[in-house]
Amino acid sequence: MFLTLDPLYWLLIIFSTLLGMGTQAYIRSTYKKWSVVPSGLGQTGAQMARRMLDQGGATECGIGRIAGTLTDNYDPRSNCLNLSSDNYSGGSVASVAVACHEAGHAVQTANGYIFGRFRTALVPVVNFAQGTWVLVFFAGVMFRMAGLIQCAIILFAFSVVFQLVTLPVEIDASRRAIKFLADSGSEVDHQGAKQVLIAAALTYVAGALVSIANLLYLVSRTQRR
Image (cartoon, rainbow, N blue to C red; front, side, top):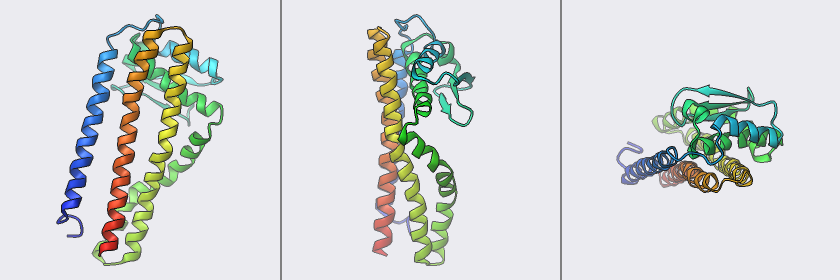
């Protein structure tokens, strides 16, 4: 009853769903567009990532394959880039852009990028908060305990902080990738990478906006009780 009868709650659900669907559709269409454009550098995503890693001081970082599409990531625990098969062996502008973006994260780690270190330090706290805040929140509502509700909101706030810290980390990784490709001398890769990585950045912006909206809603809703 606390949330389900509130029209603002359902408006927030609709906003979150539409924003998420819109940003996902945009990145997939942008990626698809540039995935059929051959890279002007004549190398695969994995090869260009290796070049960027070596040039950026992340020479010990490994590169491996991972299943799926757009599942690419950098794992700081194993110091390894995990590239989807299309981006690992593909030679398109999109493949090179995504691979170099992930290489940007490894270069951040190698150079002690402050926001990257802060984000990594937040991971265990956020994992705990994400797994418990809903339970604590509904326990507070059920037993009418304002202290539990406030505790749940604080736990949720850690997730918001994590997403806000993630934004500069992702933007900086893309900036490094775009600069590397520009310096490599291929205009088509430079321009294509900007479009692909800006589209990808919008998904993180959208996620942060949704989280902020949810946090503000929870705070305002509890204050109105």
